[in-house]
Structure formats: C-alpha cells, structure tokens
Amino acid sequence: GSCGQKARDADSSERVLMDMRWGLVPSWFKKDDPSKMQFNTSNCRSDTMLKKSSYKGALLKGKRCVVLADGFYEWQPQSGGKQPYFIYFPQTKDTVDEGKEGDEERKGWRLLTMAGIFDCWEPPTGGEMLYTYTIITVDASKDVSFIHHRMPAILDGDEAIRKWLDFAEVPTQEAVKLIQPTENIVFHPVSTFVNSVHNNTPECLTPIELGAKKEVKDTPSSKMMLGWLKNSQEGSPQKKENDLPRWTSQFIHSPSPKKTSVDIMQQWLGKEGEPAAKKRKA
Image (tube, rainbow, N blue to C red; front, side, top):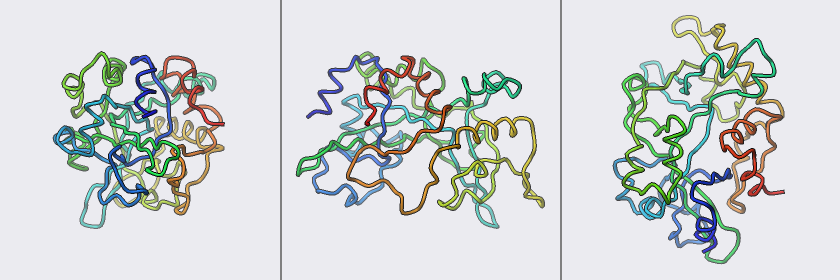
C-alpha cells in the first residue's frame, strides 16, 4: 500500500515529523471503524511486543517511531486516593536559562523521547490512510518504582534515537536492546488538578509540597519550568472532553504554540523543518 511505498521512498535515516493517532490500529484490522477495536493499544509491553499480533507485524517491518512529550504523569496509589507525579528528563542549566530570554526561546525544554511502534490502516471502503502508534512500556526504574511499577521506554540521547529510527541499518533484534528502563529521569508531585481532562494549563505541572500544605513550591527550577511552559501554552487550544480526535482524518489539527515546541522538534529533526514541511497539511 501507499504506506509501505512511503517507507521505501524515504531514506531510512531521514526523520519525518508527523501527527499520528494514539492507540495502534493494526494494518490487518478488518472492520470499517477502528473505534470498534475490542482492546486498548495505547501501551505495548516490551516483553510481549514480538509475540502479540497487534504489534509484531509492524515491529518486524521496521515501523519504529519516537513519541515526543514534555513528560508524562503517573499516579501513586495512596490510602487517601492517588497522588499524581510529573516525570521528565532532567533539565540542565543551559537548556533553559532564566536570565536570557532569547536563549530560553531557542533551546527550551528537553523533550522526553519515548520509543513507539506505528502502523498504517487503510479503511476497507477506501479513504485516507490512518497512522496510529503505541508507546512501549518497561518495568519502572528504581527511582520511580515507588510511584508505579511500569514506565514508558525512554530513548536517552541521539545515538539511541538514531538506532531506533533507522529501520534499514538496525535490525529488529538489535533495536529491541535499546528498550530498557532509564535512571536518567526526574519527577515531582503535582496537584490533583491534572486529574480532570478539562484542565490543560501549566498548573497541571506545577510542583507542590506533599504533606499538610498543598501549595506551589517556588523554587528556581519550578519558576524556570513554568516560565517556559507558559510561553509554549500561549495560543495552544484548551482541550475539551468532546474534542477528542475524530477517525475521519489521521491528522489532528491544532494551532501550533507561538514558538517553542515546534521549533524544538524541528531542531531535534536535525533538518531545519524540511521533513516537517513535507508532511504538513495546509
């Protein structure tokens, strides 16, 4: 199909930035509507990914991707309900330097790079190809295991990312060795404000003090983070519960934040926005 053709036309080391829908729909899925799938494919366990029919085919065909995010949330079960945490890459002083406005815009947040598998599904009745993905999960590393026993498979550094993405040069059996827990991760507790899907503001990520007082911690690093997040939030839409992406298109349209994330992703792509431009829909 056109999906395989695209992969063959692309140089295997070329990075293409694309919108895909979360929750892998295998190419072999027969029904006319992917929402009729009986099972959840948003996460894929690393120990069974080469056995499960939902993922095995795509993985063996080299359909490996990297999922970018500021970080992820995990809820720690507690007697009084669950305590949410925000988990992310350590941010070095030179990544986001408070003093220099210009630099902060240029470098910004170090995005979390999670290993994923994608697939392309063609509606049996014809129509636009649907691109979907799943995030691979592993046992949690020592430091975060008190929050939860699983974590996403995180690719730390450009070499790991390059190997995971280069499906022609790096065979499956070699690539899966990159899938392991990472200790290079930091976290902080956040308010249960994040529990509601209606809330999509920097307050979701604000560090809080655990214990009697649930107020925001005002540390230099939290100030730095919030400053950056507020910048990237300007102009980005609020999410609404009934605003979930529709199946009619594989592309989820949302206006880009004024700078920050998109620029960082293009910088990460390494080819100043060229692949992104190629795929961008008008």
